[in-house]
Image (tube, rainbow, N blue to C red; front, side):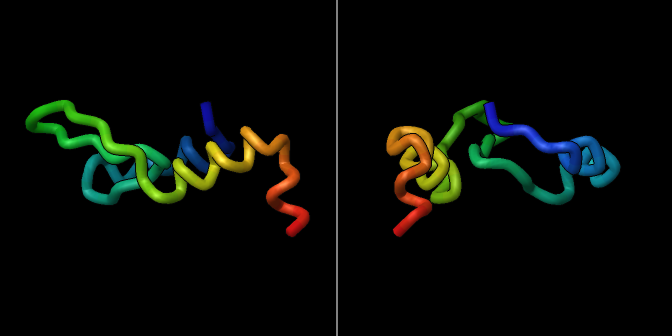
Length: 53
């Protein structure tokens, strides 16, 4: 999973600001991958080669 040291600071904002690569609809618990998540998937699938473009 994608994680960084700064993720811990996000908790101070509670649920008022959205972070991450997956959007969660709290009323239905439906998860939707954001464009940043799709990009991260492409980077991983290409073993980082996409970054050299």
